Length: 93
Image 1 (cartoon, rainbow, N blue to C red):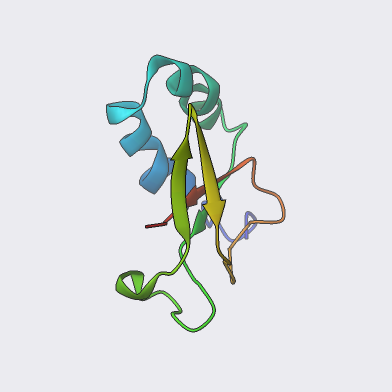
Image 2: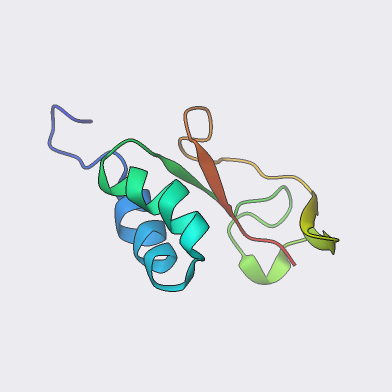
């Protein structure tokens, strides 16, 4: 993809990075946004689920806050770059 001029981490640089730069805490900006800007971080998109595909209204993955942590329960499929990503931008209820 790089030989063809395709911007490999476009989901990271054009989708996730700008949102995090705008709304994330300083800790997240330092840990994630700065490495994105340096080209050192890939963020996969965790939307698709069995039985729902990319229909975000049909998601069944749940996120529950327990103390200062989040517990995620569910399944994701077809996560582009999930095998090499540093983080996953996850959609959950």
